[in-house]
Every structure is written in structure tokens, then in C-alpha cells.
View: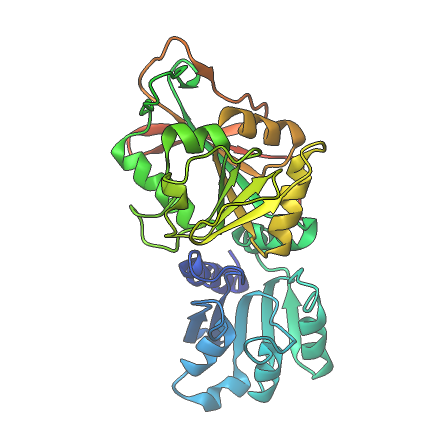
Amino acid sequence: MTKDEKYMFRCLQLAANGRCTTPPNPMVGAVIVYQDRIIGEGYHVHCGQAHAEVNAIQSVKDQSLLKDATIYVSLEPCSHYGKTPPCADLIIEKNIPRVVIGCMDPFALVAGKGIQKLRDAGVQVKVGVLEKECQDLNRRFMTFHLYKRPYITLKWAESSDGFIDVIRTSGRAVKISSDLTQMVAHKRRAEHTAILVGRRTALLDDPSLSTREWYGQNPVRLVIDKDLTLPSDLRIFNGEAPTIVFTAKDNNPKYLNTTFIKLDFNKDILPQIMQVLYEKQLQSLLVEGGQILLQSLINAGLWDEAYVERGTIALNEGVPAPSISCPYEKENCMGRLFLHYSNPTYKFLK
């Protein structure tokens, strides 16, 4: 590992601290080095607050050292005024002579402009250090801006013999996940800005789709209910998080914290849903069921990752698990086997 890679790796460690708090902004870490010694660090803590470069510069006790220092940042410094001033301007103002950048920012208001502004000011700029790792850290942000859709993660638990549920008439769910892996599921919810289920899952499981077993903001809850047959006393309508219902109906009921969006069910609704989520700036989507919805997304190629928990019980019959055909990695988590799939179709890495 080179010296530049060593400090960029530290940027990545710092950036990851903002995983649940920075969206829709990207995770960014910054490190300031003077004579091979770190004199300042920072990361983007929360959307709307100071960026990583600002926090790193402010952490330097002796500001006179900045004129002979190098700042490492995992993502291209911004060059535009948003909720905060441009970080590229601050770097120039502080006379920092060298900037090492992990990867470019695909956001249209940046997209190389920050790099160019620095170079025009005479700053030495190096781009592409641990580029793949920096892009992968913000793969949700990257996917959203490059493909104009949210980053989609599929998740389900299946029995040891490949079923996700029995054929239910009683309305009672079969529990395949353990209490510990249920906590992992809530962690994934906290890492996404939206969560989607189908009508049958909402009706039979009555999920709250919240992060009650993990620290973090509740995702926006989405449910498909073409004919508005879901009862109003379901937990998805309890108002504790924003809820969006995709329907074909015009006359919608009044539910607390709930929005109804009409789709054309005579056409493929998946692209329509993706467009709505893009317009609402919902950058990441977790899909928890049911089987028809999950399989539809797989068949359409509209997914990026899938986490499949392999349970220890056999159901012998019931609703078959979705079928997904691509390489996967095995992961052991909380005493359970998880199969982690990555969609090879969508690529934003060089």
C-alpha cells in the first residue's frame, strides 16, 4: 500500500461513520497530512451540516501548517453553493497546495468542476487513489445519479428447503429469521431511505417496516395496493413514518402521514415506481417481499444486491423462494448463513 493509499484508506474509515445520517448526500471522509503526520480529520456527519473537508480543516490546531499540507478526500470536493459553501473554495482559501481525491462525484453540479476549479487555482490534484473502494462506498449515491433510480437491495429469509412461507389461511406468519438476524434486518432498514412490500405481505405479516430494533431513521414505507383493499388498522398506516401507497384508484382515504400515488396498472408499474422514487430523491430502496414482487424485480434486472438468509427449519411445502441466478458470496452472521448476491448488469466502476 502506497502512502497516498494509506491515507485514503483512513478517509474511507471516517466516511463510513455517516452511513445512516448523510443521505441523500454521499459519505465522505477527509484527512490532512503534514510531513507524513495526520494533523486533521473529518467526515460528513449529517446532511445539511458541514462537509468532510470543512470538519477536517477546522480540526487542525495550527492552521499555519495548511499551506504545506496535503488534504486527502474520498470524493471530489464540491464546487457549488448548496446548504453549505463550496469545499473547493475553502481549500483554495486555506492555500492547501496538494489535494488527493479518491473518485469523481457524478452529481451534475459537481462532476469534475471541483477538480477543475482546484487546478485552475494552481493546486496540485491527484485523482483515482483507491478509486474502486471510494466508488463502492457510495454505490447507492452513484447508482442514483448515473441510472436515475434508487439503489435496490432485495432481502428475504428462506427455509432450509427453499420456501419463504407456508400457504397461509390462518393469517399467521412463519418465523424463519432468528431474533438476532431480525436485528440485522432492522440495521439494513436504517441504511436505506425507502422500503417496499407488496399487498399480501402487508396484509398477512402486518409489518411496521420500522427500525425499532436498531438506531436510525425509519425509511419511507412503500406498499402496492392496486384496489385499496388493505385495512386501515395495519401498522404500515400508523403514521410513525411516511407511507406511500401505489394504487390504481382516484378516490383515496385520508390516513395519517400517508400519500397515495396513482399508477397505470395496464403498463409495467416497476419503471413508474422507479420514476416516483427518483423524483422524490429516495436514493436507496430495500425490498422485503413478497415473492411475486421480488421475482418481478429480479426478472426485470431492477436490483443491485440481494441478501438471502438461509434458515434452519424445513417447511416441506409452501411459497417457493425467489429464483436468482448469479454468483454469490456466503456470509455467516449471527449464527446464520447468508447468501449475498450482486447484480453484474449494472456497473459504475471503471
